Image: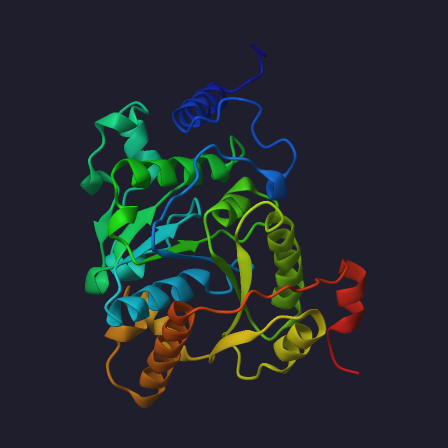
Length: 314
């Protein structure tokens, strides 16, 4: 042991090692990078439609995921939302609380998953949406992909996927982490959330490249783009046309969204103001479109320097 290693660091590393072992990932891990991360657990969701929601950090993936989950539930579907970010804040507008994470409850039973009950890590949210927060290892001590893998393993062992129509993975924004890549092994469609600005479109281009690489080995395909927090969509549409993507929905920039987060509720609980109703209707149309099935998009992302020159106004 290095004499200068802090005791907390040693404890965190041991905790991560236990998590990896519980997930069946105590081998070489994901040394080939996030796009090539390999997990032993494959999710057999039966007839469930599985979607992974991507986008740069702070673009509104959790808000989008939660309201989309409610929209699916309004269609009479049984919905399971899985938050994949260590911040574990994907589902709080559904449950009105920060629910315990999978890694929290595993630590509580000394990483013996056979001791867990379903109600220990699955919580019911608004309109019956089932909510799970994967959580993550302490910062700098491990890969979020391990936690997502163990979460899927628990869901299978407790037969939760057999009673689900729609599964939504709300994925963290970091394209280089295994926690980013692992949901792609389980999803049917990957959907990207982006605003009509340089930063989110630049990030979307890298996300598209990662998804395309993963689709060589897995069934996941690009489903399209949700324009979010934007009055216009001209830059998103221009980019989509250039590489072969499609806009599925446009969620306008509205203060009602900010207020819904502060109220810890979904937009479907915000009353009947015409602006709010309009956004609710857009989510309902998106859910109907995704349930009906979207075409497989074969997009060709740009090189970083190419998209840098492409974006913007003349």
